[in-house]
Image (cartoon, rainbow, N blue to C red; front, side, top):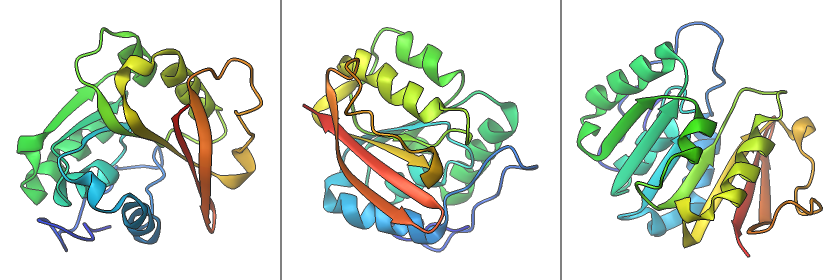
Length: 186
């Protein structure tokens, strides 16, 4: 795993020990940031279920103004901090060891332009996180994107749920066994 572009291009990232995380492949991460494009410049980015931190680190490397990393477990938090040191991008980052859903219940401290959701598979946590952001739209800017990384078999449309009041799905991209689902404010 490496940083693909920007200030830390080519730097290798550490993996989280064990099998508790499912890192995004370089190919999917590159495709994601090709979609986001230059809009990442100066953007605020929330990396929920951060794992290795590779997505948020890629955002920082490409010019994001600030990235908030959230993960509940000690090993990923330690790995994110080490990866930030390796890349020299720790100045624009904040790492919290905390439950993602508890974070979204806190008073808003920052409005995000991008929220990346990549939770453990098969627990429907991606849906819960999207619904939580829908119920707390004050966390996201007017033109924010919420992006869920899931295994394709986990997908079911949230647009049909009456409880989704503020967000709407606007795109999907599949890369082998990874599906990226994009939401924005209605």
